[in-house]
Structures are given as C-alpha cells and as structure tokens.
Image 1 (tube, rainbow, N blue to C red):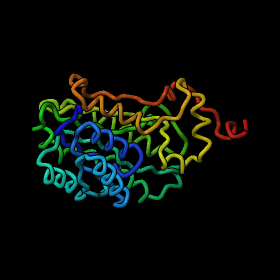
Image 2: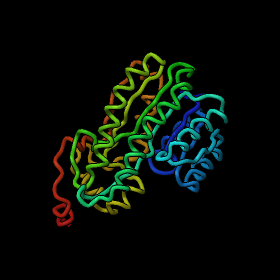
Image 3: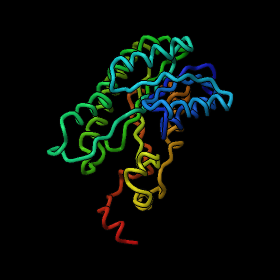
Image 4: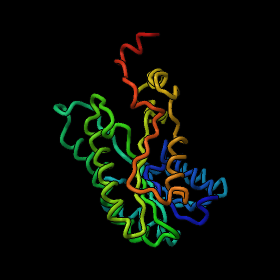
Length: 262
C-alpha cells in the first residue's frame, strides 16, 4: 500500500496503459482521478476500481481541450481535496506522410501531445507542490522520441521528443516547488489500440527480435510508473526511463520481410 491516501490523476485512463496505471495505483491504496476522452471506457475503469473496494472518481475530458484539462484537475481536487501525483498518459497518433497530412490532423496532435503538457503542468503545479511528501508529474512518452525513426510517425515521434525535453526543463523549474518530473518511454506494448493498428501477428513477430523477446504489456509500464511515483525514486527527477525490452537497440527489418517468413 505504497500510495495509501495519495490522490492520483491519470489521463488516458479509459484503456490500455492508462487503465493499467490507474488500476495499479488503486490496488496500492491511492484515490484515483480517472480522465478518459470516451466516457464508457472511463466508466469501465471506474467500475473496476470501485468493485475491488478502491476509491475513484471520473472527470472525463479531452486533453486537446484547454478547459477540459482545467476541469480534470479541479474536478479531482474538488472530489478528494488534494492532488499528489499526475500521470499524463493520454495522447493522439497521426499516421501518414507529412506531404499528405491535413493541417487539422497535425494541429490536433499538437494540442493533444504538446499543448496539453503545458496546460496540465500549469494547472496541477499549485496542488502538487502541497503534496504529502513530494509531488510527482510523470509523462508517458515513447521509444519513438529521439531514439528511433518509424515511417509515417514523424509528427508523433517529434511530439514525444518535445515531451522529453519539456520534462527535463520542467524538472528544474518545478524542483523549487517540491515536485519531481520524470518520463516513461514505452516500447511496443500490446494494447488494444496498437494491435488494431498493426494487426494481431506483426507485433509479436517484431518482438521476437528484441533482447527480451516478447511484446510488452501495459502492466510493464504501470510498474515503471509506480516506481517513479514511489519514495524509492525520491532522488530522481528530469530523467526518462525506457521500458521497451531492448527494442531500440536492434534494427527492425522491413515489415514485408517479416510477414514473408511465414
């Protein structure tokens, strides 16, 4: 029960890694503020926590919307009276070549993946600075940030590289406010969203080439987040923790070559 009586806001908590993170905090005693763009998914996460005897509330909202971000923070603080930890997991992915990408697609990704970082940090900081020990702000980035290149994911990878740089600078500024700021960079994680995008076979074939030859699971990311949010990481700030089974250290073959091996 490392997080007994702590209040944790998790964005993108309706599915995948966000849900796994929210459930993990609830299991260890945290009061969880669930933010999910799609209400039915957020309600499912809420029900899972409450059915297990945990405490949670649903604040909804789209991180691409300025007022929604403000409402997430205010709603959580209003419900539980405090805010100790923020995990920003929500993000959008824009696939395609730059030359073909509509302006509004890129604009929405910028609001979701870049502007939301600023909004959430600004709104949460006054509350996190009053945390029981040190406040925590943890961003969920990606191995695409700075470490590799995947065709058609230039805007997404670039937005995550911005996130990493933003977090490093923020760690210095927020240190004086009693807040630690860190990043977790997932690799190829077997979420429903990822499997629907890449298919049921390709991700597993890719993972066979990793030093740890398996597809990552949402719980792997949750465990890394829990470490950085815990007292065991009280002297860590401004860092990025890569959780990818070593994927970024190996060259990925052409997708068609992998599928042709069948």
